[in-house]
Length: 407
Image 1 (cartoon, rainbow, N blue to C red):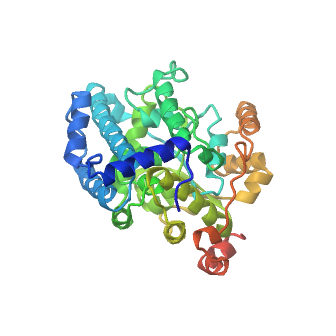
Image 2: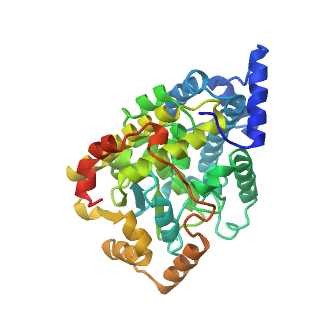
């Protein structure tokens, strides 16, 4: 399907096709060029742990040959990759100047995960309101260096830089507001953090990278979580809460690695009928990929998403059932319960993990909920059939999971 997008996006794509037909070169996607550009922008040359080179090489190869990127998509892939590389250089420089960053303890983080579209964003936003908690915000994950400090955290100039990038995205894809809210000061997914390792599920959300993704799903994700921990140390050096509250559906794939790196973590698993999830997820992915590619096959996206996330769910539940940590390190939240009784759900989470639920935290959560009602920017509509998915086949695929959690 062609991207609906905005007039600006359609004009950029049309211009890209004219350039291609004229035989003129498009934006070159090359690992060595990107590394050198990052060095030139920063004047630095230490990228840290060299394990990022292989996933970076594989990712760029898919960008160049498999992803079907438009001119706009190639520009975006280039800019995003160089931003990640410059962040790596600057964060390594920060650590050399301030080795105490690496001594920061990251104690008892709470991770929210589950299939996409199961309330993880809502729950993360609520828990992030507790003054005892620290949740990574969009702007500080996009521009983490120098380490943010508490005094300037709400008027850091990087907030405006992040807002400009998000405004551009919404200009290119204005309908995306109905699917997922984005704002510089909102808590956001850990995928932005793990993308700095280039061993991350971030890239498949907005680009079709099949070779890279197939390789990623066979990898030990511990290096990604080690990079994640280093990132949190960086963010908390000058502002530490009592605990981090984090979220990403893709943590389903990395439960084992997560507990290897964070042995004292707690994991909140959100649950919703997958028949209500996979169509929404396919719609979200199609909308994102359509921003950066001229053609996106909706049926292919539907098949890809349901296969991938059924496997991720299976991985997480197998790891849990095999007892990699004690059972009380997990807590289950049903989406329907969260919508019906958000504060009762939050209180149960606090009791389970032996946390103090203060009146201040509850008041802030109530304000947040009032300011962010469901479907604030319009209703997100979709059907399974739009993405080539058959309801009976999907019911069979997820039967055991639906029965286990009463969905």
